Image (cartoon, rainbow, N blue to C red; front, side, top):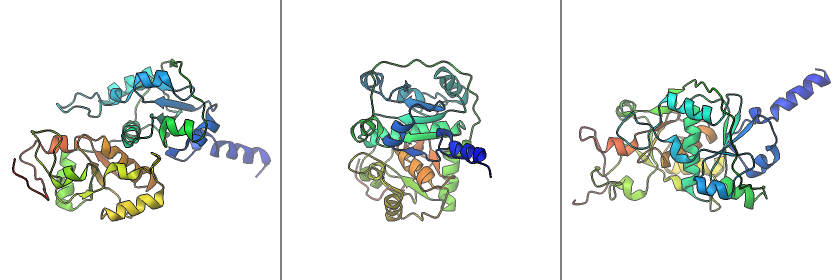
Amino acid sequence: MNKVVILLLLSLIFSPAFAGSALVSGGWLKEHLDEPALYILDIQAPERYRQAHVPGAVNAPYRVWRTGKRTSLPGMLPPTEQLEALLSRLGIKREHHVVITATGGRAGDMSAASRVFWTLKVVGHPQVSLLNGGVSDYANRFGGTLKARPNQATPSQYRAKPDRHLVADIGMVENAIRRGTPLLDARTLGEYLGVLTARPAERAGTLPGARHLPFDWLLDNDGRIRDKPAITILFQAAGLDVGQDGTIHFCHSGNRAALNWFVDYAILGHQDARLYDGSMGEWSTRTDLPMESRIVLPR
């Protein structure tokens, strides 16, 4: 193999499009800011974005990624054509390596970033990464530069190649219960046991046979997603076989569970992991569907 070919291969391996990791550190991002294929997608609230963001980042706050109206449930996955219009407005192209940045420091930020990661994978975007620890870790731990001036995108013509196998719907969950497919509840212990509900009209409890792993356990004390050995221990403690693929992740509205799904899909490598978009906000309001409550309180 001649020197030209070797150099070409090395340039591909170490370019953002071939970074090979769905989870990148602030140090990695700092070193790759000038790469032409890199697209930094900032999902902070607009006021936070205007205070501080990674240089070059374009803002699309988390709420715009959950505006689907195909059901009466709030915050569901938008239709493909709506996502195509959003990605086109943001100037995202299929050749871009999109790195999603949230504020960081809280489990909610990492779950929001994970939900956007899932959304981009559902529309079939090839290369997506999540910034571990968010903007705060990039700046505080790695000394990354921050900017305040907003960046304007040049619109593109994005065409999705949807990958719906990452999405679990109510029928799939019914089949999973019958077949014993692993189900993982990312909510609080009180919600899982049936002590608490997100809304008064909802039935208490969880999906029959579901295991429990609170989403915030997946972050360390510094607000970063834990490494694979720690995640493996947590999944095993929840009673899951880490060698088994196809787990369906759920919470109340598919937000918190997105973090559980992300580590299952991207870190444990289970490409058939699924996120139940409607989650308990949909399931618990259907009186014809089974529920399981470990603790039954008078209501």
